Image (cartoon, rainbow, N blue to C red; front, side, top):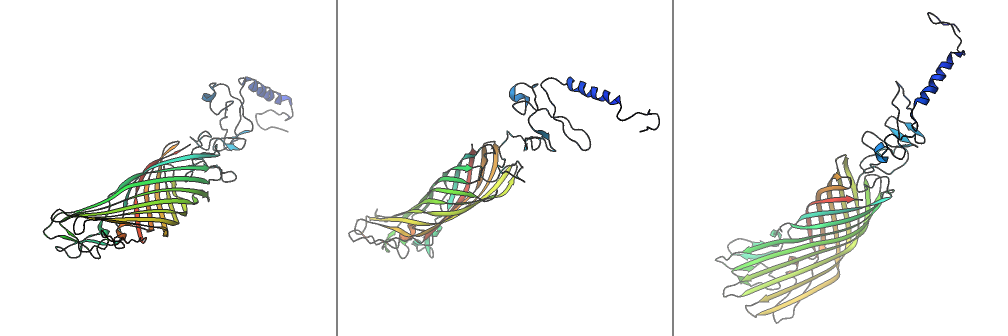
Length: 421
């Protein structure tokens, strides 16, 4: 084969290749002992070699920055080092030591490392994790159903109606504990919450014309009158539930479980008439709801610095309801009368819950939570709904009944922390 121009003619199989081989051997001997190079392939030009330390991915981890060896089957991809088919560095700043927010799926299309939805922040290096939540609830309840209570001749219609007794806010805690299977995404949950004391106080100052009980009266008394009065409505809520969560894809979990809910109300009316006589009316209602519920927990939006979750639950409940009423007077025929009535089950009850929560990560294992909480109960006994069903007069047989046609809505905000380990 002939060369053209100033190059001299030589054979491609001649002894001139000996110099290239000799140079390659000298280059290999010039490398420091104990090091090897995993060369990267390139399209447009050579890429830098990758040095990997024995026993780790950083010289600082073993304390010997100069001791590097080549790992088994080490190759270099477009995004970083790949060991035995596993990507060690997905991009700048991500490492296999940062399992927080990494999905645990396998197979084609599951090589992304990102903040996972909902509650499974265990990382791909664990089979499961515990998640503890503590929330502070600030809640309001709506007023009871329509029921006239007190009249006064100075105004038309009832001066005080039960549907005008809006309560002040009540506060309480909510504690949740989850155990999450990081392989399947399924979880079990136990949650307890309590909120007290919802309170509505309506004082009626002394006026020129006496107050009277609005028809049909209270406990069969329709003619009582007084100069001043105080009406008081209090209530409280507590609940415990145990649920099983079934993961359906990355962003949705179905849940089913058992729940107990207690709703308590107390209504009191105390009036003073001329001459120092007093009338006292009081009703307590307890509702213990036991039943099953189903629901859905979904991730609506996920971003690197925040996510938004939505929750809805609904269930049918057995209501073990009890009401107790008492009347005492110092006028007319002085004395007291009382009655207590309970039914088990009093009626079928319903409970529904909705929630909307924003979650902001604070540290690797701690999130800040804020959101909306709403609970609806129906088929319950409410205190003001019992005032027409009792016949209480001192010295007479007491007659009682229970009404479970009431309903209440409790809603407000939640603020809390979410820890996972």
